[in-house]
Length: 212
Image 1 (cartoon, rainbow, N blue to C red):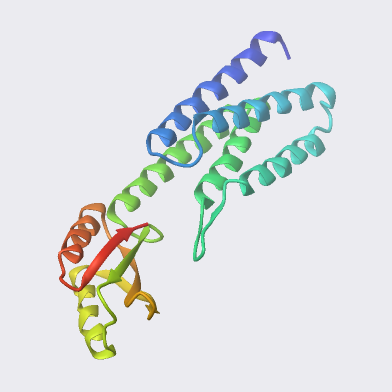
Image 2 (tube, helix red, strand yellow; image 1 turned 30 degrees about the vertical axis):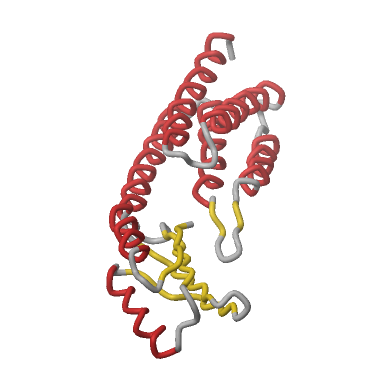
């Protein structure tokens, strides 16, 4: 393998990963262009080194790279009290390592297919996020003025009718401070959710509310 081929493969991977990483960062995802660029470029270089060191049997070295990237992807997961985020970012890191390896071993056609697939999935993912479909949910926390009777609370839960996918998941009663904390899971597009927040905040029985 000559020097020109090596630089050509590394450059392709660097630019492709950089472009995707910038798009992810502009979308305010937890992992930006730096991680994608470093992972892809590093995988490509290691794939090339594997071919140079063991041209007849490079698979053990290539497999070790993919395994190592899996641990890095696990670090992208973000756990909250009721949910785990970051699976898409973790999978993206792993797939870009595969992309780097594929180009590194000279499989340009397969690498191009992988890269195009990533963009297609990313576009669908962005559309679903905009529409609030699937796992794109917000938590609506409402603090009431005083403690509401059960019958009145059921009546207040008619707030659920203001949005298609809203579910009361938790009720906490604070007798000391004379308040209740209601936690809803909201699923909907951004405009609908913010309209709901404005509507709920204007209710006389609501002391405060916020989205998480």
